Length: 575
Image 1: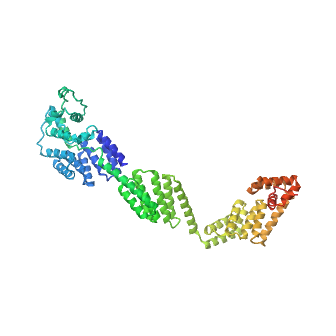
Image 2: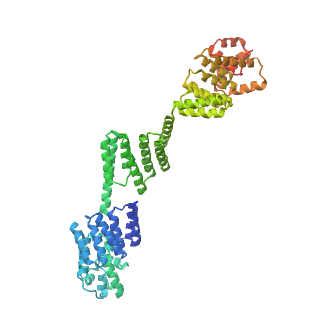
Image 3: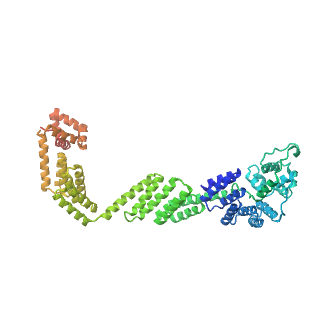
């Protein structure tokens, strides 16, 4: 994030790593191109390495972004001074002082600029103490003092500021103030050495060797142009925190209004929060939620798109990005009129799940997919075409082309999934092909759609008969006879089931047939429940060992029905 890059730049600047600081400020500007402080700080870093043209461009951008900020003119003046344009530097410092008349940095910069504008051609610098005093000339003095944690506080002490100005006016007066430990500390800072404070007199300390004539000229010119640093913009950081705090209060007020269903008020609070803090996308997602409740789905989608885009820039939490995508998908579902309209909503939910796998998002995805399928069925619904497909299937059935017939019956059901006749006909095809489970499923669906349709019962009974579940087949035929008592197919089905059940009771089945029938019966949950019932187990024991007691049991209709069920299934034989 921009704040992180800015903090790294400030740390590098304070440590004197100006090139590194400039790179970090450049990274921060890429993330927050409208932040004037970042351009100001980069201008200071560039000026510190004598890249004055670039420093000037950043200073001009700073002033352009925030023309009422005095610090920007300080940067502008320092860059102009570094380029040798003393007149422009004077004008820049004066504009800054017009905004902040008490700014010490601007005052010092203006004095340096005016001095540079009126100064005669340079002469070789003096030697000894005067040469050292010359190091206190130019903006570099303020830059180094402000960037060093040990000396930064001195800039707020009036007596120390008075000493510095005196030394700047008269470099030879430096010796007068070397007894002050603050001045000694600053001198060591300017010489890049650590000077111990003398216990007796300055004469006990060896004077540093003054630089050569060419070095002194180069360093003096650089110092005159270097700007005052700004390791941390305290005022702006404080303002940022205050704005964030105010934004959170607006969000809380918006949440309260949302719970009261006062949506217009909630919108106002969330909008205000966004204006105060554009680094929290929850304000956008919350407003999007309000728009959904208000039925303003287009506005919701716009907010969600902005939230996703801003979230990517800020490297926001994946959960927040997922929430924005989920709300966008919800709005798209609300707007969907056709099955194809659901495609983009489904895609949006899928993207949300890649960001964060949230149960609510997954639920909404499943609902969207079901809605799409239902709409597809509705759009495909055409009873007339369904009847045409059914007739084609009937013709193929007569020709014993059962697989082709199934294709047409299936198409007919897609056109009209509520026609029981098509399920009945397809069940007959499956039965002919030996696909009993599929046939049974279609027959049961046929009965479900129309419980009075006799064909459904005959189809189901036939499948059960072929599966040798004679007891179940007989129940199915009997259920059909309740609706159509004289139906010949149903009556014949009952007759055939009774014959098979009696054949088993008379022992006319082979051992293999009997074993197969019993194995199938034991897979029936109803048979399993009867055999595991303690009462029925006692009844079965009495039937074998206590005939008198068994006669009493048989008088109970419920017990008699269960015994008949076991007999029909071939589990029990009555002799």
